[in-house]
Image 1 (cartoon, one colour):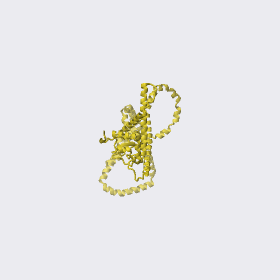
Image 2 (cartoon, chains in turn cyan, purple; image 1 turned 120 degrees about the vertical axis):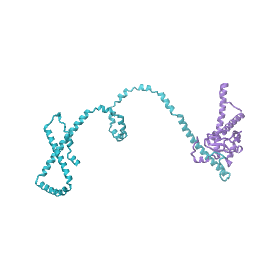
Image 3 (tube, rainbow over the protein chains, first blue to last red; image 1 turned 135 degrees about the vertical axis):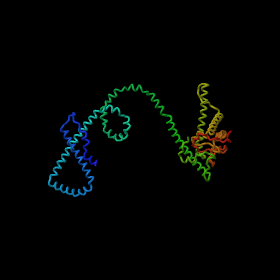
Image 4 (spheres, helix red, strand yellow; image 1 turned 120 degrees about the horizontal axis):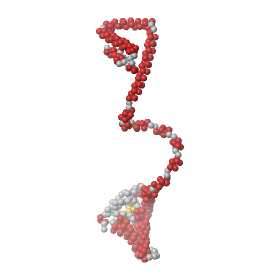
Length: 256
Length: 166
């Protein structure tokens, strides 16, 4: 019962504290109207309370009686709707409701704007900024994720390098460079010596020549082996020998 | 550092007794090296004579017996030292050969010396390689040595047989 009462009287708490009047000047007509409305609401609340108490005691008989009463009410409502201009009144009511809503929204917006302006006036931004720890914020920023979302190619494509290059006066830049001073500071003979020291020409020549010599010697040795075999076969044939020569390694000879 | 032998045929023959052609090539090269050594000795003697006695500079002219004897001595020293040291003279190094004893080991100095003397006195003993079934020259048979294909470089010398020492 208390819940339904609360729902029926939503403006009660608002009425307990009337809206401030600009300049603290009492507007008598407004005060009277508000008092009348408050009285009506209080009367409605008490009558509902009383009706609720009665209904709580007479629930069952009322329910029995309510059925035919409801049917009668529905019938009389249909008759009334047919004979009275209910639709017109409903349209009028709806229009009034919408107008009231528009006024409320406008008032709320004005109030919010005024509130925000007042709040901002009260805030000392320097103090707020002073309390901000940039390092902490930076630590919470995921730079990788941001960079991933950046299309570097697209950015590069939008840069007109030619235009930038055209704006650079190379002659002026070169004219400001004192080449002689730079050259005087460079130890060319020292650098040359360092480069020559780093490049071990002797090692390069040694490696290449030893590889070439090694291949030549290998070829010579292989040819020698083949001629050895050929000579041996020819001599063996002349001497009418059968079978191969015994060229096995001497006992204990290290095998490669 | 052992060089990789790429020739399959050559790899298979490593350690086997070498034939006539390779040995002749090696010995011809050694003959040239010995001749150069003798010439070097003569040039050194000529320079010494020039420095001591003055111009003209000329190579000393030796009597034939001394010429042959000194030449033979140089050749014997060269061959004996190289065979006993590494088993390979310059010619054998070039031909990829190594002189070993019957056990396949490096020659002892005395064995190398006798072999060198025999070669200098009777080089024709090498021809026996043609006839020998084991590719042995007369010197090999007398001294008990063999010449094998061995291209590998052996940084650590194999120890000689103690029985062959001295």
